[in-house]
Image 1 (cartoon, rainbow, N blue to C red):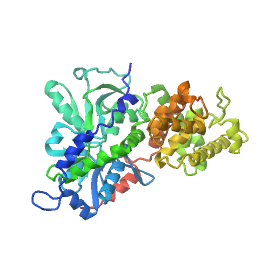
Image 2: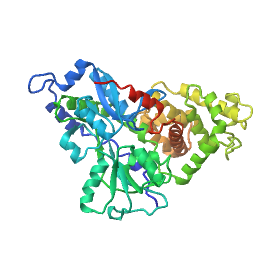
Image 3: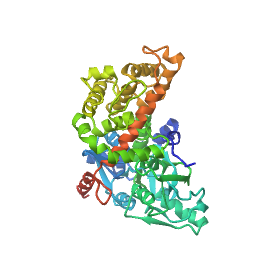
Image 4: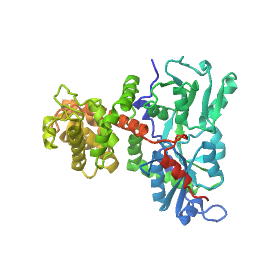
Length: 481
């Protein structure tokens, strides 16, 4: 059986220091001047009015979508800059070596790029509190012999130069001198996964989080085994700096933990990763190439303020882009509209692709506007998708049940986990609309999110360096220091 990276394994993400440890650390690090009486590092950043953060282009760390900056590390860095009351400048590097050079040269104040805290790195740098964990995973190509232990690795292993994976392999080679591996400076981790998928190298070593996302694009790469216990991911600062910036980091992460921000971001970037389905993914990629171009202009035409790729993802989940699709419940067409919904949105023929897509887009947009204002803007769409599948009344019911359990009804992560309560009489008897297939809605939203991420990747124009044109333009515009 293939090794898969499932949602349970990925939701070991938030591994922050305990509140007591944080408070104790803060008492020790609260000074605003260094030993020589000069302004502290934190005070210097505030005086400058700018926090400079080194990073890497990556679907988890930092990237540009429609010229807007996004990514887990970017969102946290922006909030951290706000807490310091300064502007944020992200400074992307093209390799790990270049990234650490930025910090060594004093061109950035810190690094935020999914960096793991390893023994070698801790000799030279300081790490803030961990905000998620990763397991280093050996990857091989489906159909090849799967190694089950380090001594069974046959063939070359390629990893990034300067990476924690290279550090790990260097230590492993002391025990297994026959191990053959090389470092690459002309690629990123996703590129190495593509090389395994194309048979250009036998193995690579990557984080389990990246593998879980990338299998949606390269379904013939598989996890062989984890080569390490989970490693903490944290921000990095120069060991030569005083303690003030680290102290502010500790206070910041404690505040974000208490505010629920880390849970929200964890759900946003990891919550939709499910057990990998090879057959489903191959089918999706094939239809995205052969069938989607026929309907893409319609998705683009009727998307409105929504992303057309989100509409396309919903349509694939509903009908696999089949205009004649029909379910046992009587919903029909590309967007699987009920008769009542079709009437509401002015659709006369549910089997007409254009009418169905227009109606589905209109219905989803209306659900977005009817949701309570308290739901965060970047999570409203997931609530709306659940309502698309289940009905708005049932989603509002689950929000009430979530509140009854003393949880946050505006957090998709918490509401999502409570959707199955609608199957249970002791819970749905307390609701206005009663029983509903909550587990089905839970799966519906997660599937749409996965298809959506795949379409974002498939439709991102890339250059021969693997970066989008916008990313290259942005990097070229990074100011000199």
